[in-house]
Length: 232
Image (cartoon, rainbow, N blue to C red; front, side, top):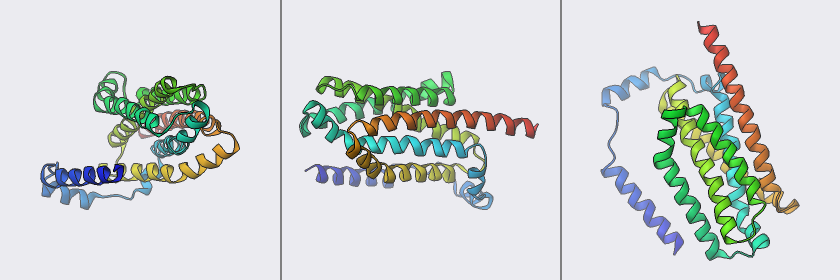
């Protein structure tokens, strides 16, 4: 049944995109973008490369959690598939609320950079709290905290990239999705391997990856300031 529901949802999304979603650019603007397209390697050679790597580490930690949390919760708190379904539903709702309305307001007030760093810190805190899981309530709460932090990061990174990139919005967001996908490919086997060593290792490594992501953002800021100074 879950697979039929997923397939039906995908079909509805396809129909919605095909018949309802409108192209934001006119044919003339799309042709101009084709002519002005520059190599995506340019984005990977500049300060923005730090943001792509940041997204890779964030996706890596998320995928590791998703691949191992069911086993962790079953062993640590005796939670079954039904309880886990509710927990991930609560986490998903919190993430949807954050991405649907909160991120936009926060980025306008605080700026994308502050929101990215805030999201990373909250995600790291969520990883640490997950290690203290004792039952359904704590599992739902701690996973939701992580989900809120993670939900702040991706839209803010995407927004910052599209503002700063000179290689075209479509190419930039596509490259960001590639790094995101790479993290989701590597994350599950890496998380499973770490879980086989110790059940808390995927979440400890998630804290470490979050710290690395935070350092990468600091590098991005420093390189951006240096590039801006050189341009002037």
